[in-house]
Length: 163
Image (cartoon, rainbow, N blue to C red):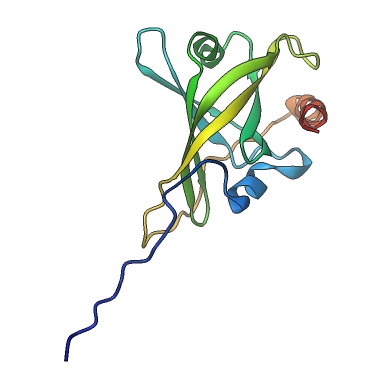
């Protein structure tokens, strides 16, 4: 009699948009900053540039928006080269890379002229979660002190632009 072999667990690999569970996590209700994400852009010399963002917010399964300081290298990179990759790690089992194209949709941003609002059009979502391991924690950030009120005001305006 032939011995049965266990099949490896099947999992999704690539999708054209955020899966429902990821979309729901990235809606980030009530102004929360987490999970935060790392956005990668291309520097002027062609090298990769990464920076964490807590404001990244899913507005549809095909688009995300985030607030960025107008003098941040990430913004200069997006203006020059729209290609971005977003790394999202969220306990207990979400690790994805989101490939897309970013553009500035409001600069200076009406809430705070020191900032801009950018939008990422999603081209592909890749599952980077290894089988057989879990994620205990992700990157977490918080608005502290006087920045709490500022962030809530920004969040409310971001929600308006997403509707």
